[in-house]
Length: 333
Image (cartoon, rainbow, N blue to C red; front, side):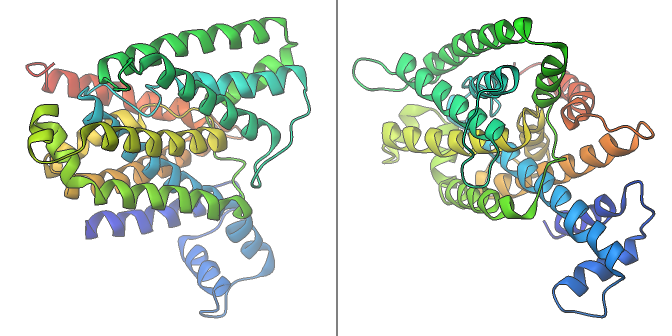
């Protein structure tokens, strides 16, 4: 844990230092220290680049990476499906529908809580998809079965993809390209005013799921085992689904769709610390933060004078890692 925290601190510094303007790692820490009143700081131009332009981007990458990874780990436990990720409930497609409608039609939409029109529409679309999935998956008795939930998520995701495709096909080339870039994910638009809300959402979710670690451990032995331990399975499952789903909706609204973080990182963390959630979830959060910080650094550095969507980088990293995990666990899947 301490090693990962130290690695994250160094990675954040490297992430802020990376960019077109040549700024050393020492200047980064000096500027950040000066901003909070420790030390003399640096010149105004360097301080502006470090504090106002690059630092919020790197911090947002760390926060979203941690949130996606933890949500993926919890959903894998709740559904009993090792292939579950934060978008399994159709929220990515729902968010795409909202963002696509605003981008391609130019429909005026009010921002909310500091978010722009596209982010607000994406959040509304993600929550709408979530409500639809729950409505389809819930049985007549009010039970929420993991198998039905996954199938409902697949169906809603297909519906969302079809609706988005219709709007893209009738849109002009510029709008279609803008939609494509949004769906590939980016933290380039990160700014400090929106950071407190993201930090609160991810912080609360991480605290809640770590507090529910023993319950999640019980789910690992099956629903009947959890009930025999006194767990109110239906209530806990509903509560945790809603918590991690709303967290995912907030993150996809802020940064678009960034895949593989919530799928791969929990598996890697289990290989290091085992399946007990009290240890697994903090390591998963730190691993997700590290992965997305470095993915964003690569996105800004691989092609000179160009910036790649961070979702492309996580896919390029995530696919080989996922294949390796599948081969390593082929006896379990």
